[in-house]
Length: 168
Image 1 (cartoon, rainbow, N blue to C red):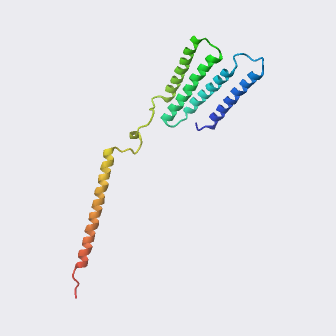
Image 2: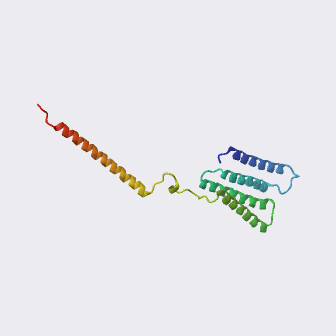
């Protein structure tokens, strides 16, 4: 993430979750549902959303996909922490976690489109196959031999010119 705004929002989410958890611990008349698990839920939800938002700006598809996977994992963890924080029955947590996983995969597919995990070398500009490189190497060697032969021919012509008898 190149944007400082996303980093600032992540720090604000951390401070907000920590502050609310401390206030819920210090003040005795707070609801029971706001506990440490709820603070972790809020934090992981915010960070997951911010990570996915930051992944939109990534340049390379591999980095973008990795950021989306990280954000999706945080969203799934947030769904699990919501189940724990709200003390939902055990039968409820599995659909909630799978729903979060499905949303994360949907967002990843929606934002990535049909992009590949990584770019192959053959798709980069200026890429040459082995045969093309070999042909260039052979052409360079041939040009070097021709240049060497032309230099030798030039030297031989100079030597014959110097060997001509001088008129006395």
